[in-house]
Length: 418
Image (cartoon, rainbow, N blue to C red; front, top):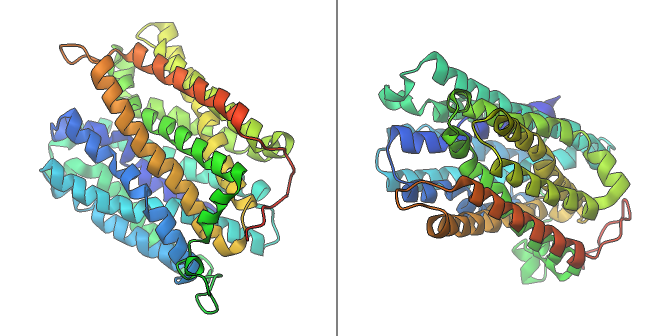
């Protein structure tokens, strides 16, 4: 129950503001697309180094539960500053600081859960998904609260400091989670002590990067980057696209419509133990890649017609498989492939590959491609061509992964790191 509450709040504090960040930037502050793009990229920039860095710190120096709570406290306080800022570049700097506090907690959330489940004699591949599903429920709850407040108080975006109410909802959740972590989550001491370490890589806590010496793990991380790029495409452009569909329902309820994706996540998370044990990580990842292709393709045929609206909802349903079979299954695969001494830093490396390198490359490449090839002279976007291009990208990634990732499914087998 404590892990359920921790996961619920972990993603509640993200869902409160992430999906409406574009609305706040464009509709409230009236910043342009370039300014929004750099602000949205803060999640990826922070993920380039903070998950691995704080994973190492948790493995070697600070109790991971204490570090987790402290990071959320700092994250919440930083979020509360954002509504005061009118300059987009100052906003970028403060948002980047907030992301440096928050992004490493996603990997720490996983590793803390794995550690405590192992202590209880449970298999994380079986026990963790039903716990992690509550994180998605927390994300949904935050999205619905944010949308309902907007509908209940139509002029909320004109109320000065409280125009940034979504950030304040996130602040409240982060402070509650910090207090909860300090008081309710069992102590998890660093396993890999500095004392006795002889190699520089051991002293610095960089053992997790030795995973790249294994060819299977190296290929896995490379494709994690490519899939991480796909994830950021819908995060960055999904809400703006749905809002642009010329239909009253999509304009009023774009955030709630997007939450169907998270509802789908809650269902697919529960199927992960079955699919991983039955098919193994390679086939599960392939399912994710083909689901991404469908996700983008269905958005491509979406529109204001009845079938177009059905396509939007179908795309949101497919998203559950696309996201879970990559992010959650990938984290479980990394856990299964590493030892307890590098549990936190290994999850940090996975997070760095997906939400760091993948996110930055995806945002930059997609931004330039959309600007050069899919933006009209009047500034309008050719949404169908954008989504079809992304669908082709996902298909190419799937075919390459099928050929290059040489992995035979052997349940419970761990990779020994020298």
